Length: 204
Image (cartoon, rainbow, N blue to C red; front, side, top):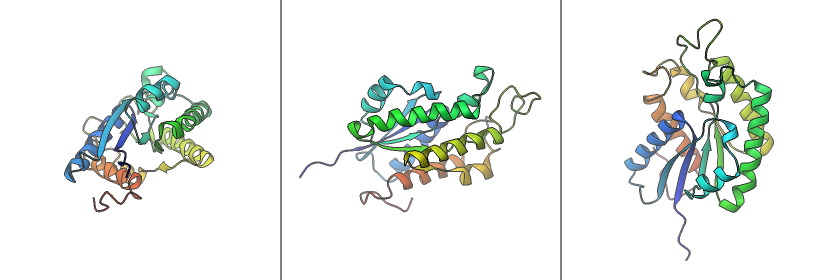
């Protein structure tokens, strides 16, 4: 009998995906699944980072089997001195989904997109005019685009807004969900991506 391929979950994004990968690692360790599941954080800030070489080197190089993508914090942040507007964001994410689906079969990974997190309204987001555009209306717009595109491409959209939104102003650093909300989100995402795999428990 052919040995089953080890599952490697790859969280693609930047710091929010880093926190997610850390919490997923905690869930894996709790259930002693270290030999069965690998967890990797794959750094990407903008949709334009997802190019052919990135997919081959990162997703292929890490042997990712479950890929969870979230690219929305940096496009709306202060770094570019202006936000990526919704029509442009839709074009960019459509290109991301297109190229990732092109490689999906050859590299053998399941592809998911998750919702973008809210950020607490600090001095920059709450300024007038804003110096950072990661406010709830902008994030809602990005998530609307993502859900629409996932429907168009037949890809799963993992919406964790029902977990994050009630806790959206709780991060101690005014950015990352390094608290119970982050832990619950990790459990929810792992339950979704492993729901049909009988090797893993469903009682996280």
